[in-house]
Image (cartoon, rainbow, N blue to C red; front, side, top):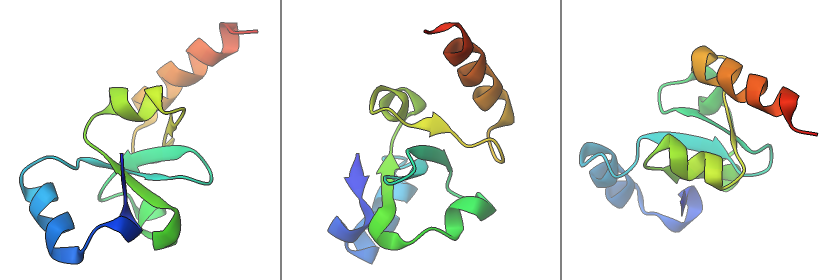
Length: 84
C-alpha cells in the first residue's frame, strides 16, 4: 500500500505505467476501486492510498467499490453476510 501524499507525481505516474499501482482506495472509508472510477477521483489526496492487487487491498481491510467493481462488491458482500 502506498499513500498518495508519500509519492511524488512523477514517481506515482511511473508506478502506474509499470503496473505497480492498479487500484486506489480511500483510507478513511476503507473502500478501493479502479483508478478511473469517478467516485474515486473525488476523494481527497490525503485519504488516497494505492494498491497493486485486489488481494492486497482486501487483506488491508478495504472493500471493493460498488460503482466501478460491482461483481467484486457483490461477492464481497455475500461473504460478509455469512460472517457473524
